[in-house]
Length: 452
Image (cartoon, rainbow, N blue to C red; front, side, top):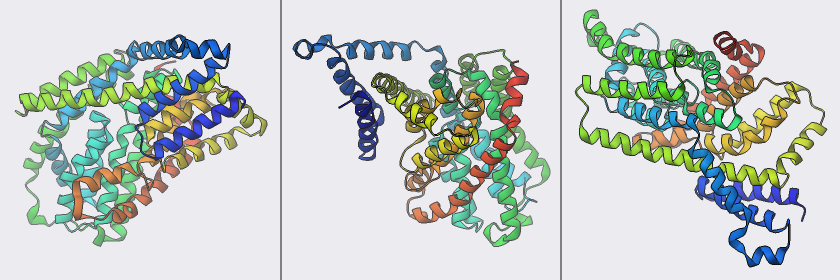
């Protein structure tokens, strides 16, 4: 069997094993080491190589790739941003934020759903953790909307869609991962994601307002007797919305202004999160330990994914897999817009069975070397992928945001109802991708302006 054929077997085997439920990171490492051992064995004297197994060069490559991951300064931002999100989550600020925004937007149709989306957007910006946002908002916003007689499908769709914004809106963990994989500037990626993120969040809100206006039974307006005086609403905003917003603006402003690296800004955000938690008198030793433990757990998962993906992609390239796919795509003589559509369709369909991390770490690098051949700006391509990866959380049967919500709501709602509720947001994501394709300046103007 030729090496390129082995590479295809390697890729197909990985997908098969992941669909069976094997852990992604360790499957990547096992496949990389196993097929790498085969590659280096078949390059020389087969008998000698098998007689001295430990001298196989795949083990040197594995150690080298592990060191590269551990030595990457950009990845330092991941645990710091994660810690910031977990500590803010435990500061008892999100519930105050949700209800104060709801009361401030009470004149709008679907005001509680709008409040849920705004809270998801703000919390996503502070956290970047989809599971944490969906879970917390499921416990907080869904019961409130249910008590206000909101349609359950409508309410669940709002929470699931809003919770996924964390992988797009800076400081997104996904963008940090992408910057390392594609060897792009995380500063420019953050700048490129600002307007697409706001476009998507704004589109969600417009949809909610229009839908609730056309069908008020989906989201009944609040009763006047349930609304406190304006002074009390402003006080709630003052102690919930503004402190968290100021912290986020300081973190993002220092990054986009070139005053700090993502790691430095993340350290400032983590310290700010501790100050906020202390100010709200919710900083206990137990909550601090929980935040540190969850941060270490999530960070180790990301690092193992990187180690596995680096060894997998290195062996896949050695076997000629990347060249095989690149040569095949180039032989089709596609126009740039045709190439982009095909790639985005592949990523979209991969989102049905796989999560964003698997798509980003394994499959996106296959297409990156082709961008120059089709004259596609790498930052524009990154934003198309980032928008598209929203769908990996919203497409059944592996719509993880739906499972996060179902996990906390249990018997309060059926999974089928959640799936129905999130379908309109899939169309909105695709619509935003079309808009950004027609107006690439949405992704490219700000990074070009800030970092000429």
